[in-house]
Length: 62
Image (cartoon, one colour):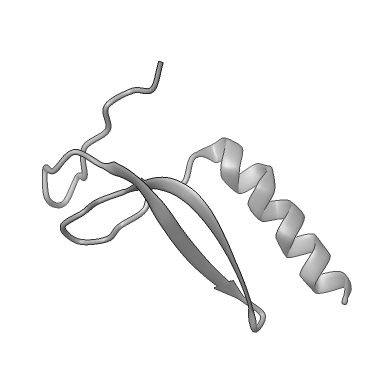
């Protein structure tokens, strides 16, 4: 069961949406919780230490 998160800036409930990240000239996307009003994205520690770290290492090795 997913927790209902709210944007700290807007007070609006976050929605699961596609978020695009750019790093070292490359882009990747993930479906993440995002504020529909201001566009801020919730990046959990699991995502930062997992998928984002993998992409970072892969791009830096090239």
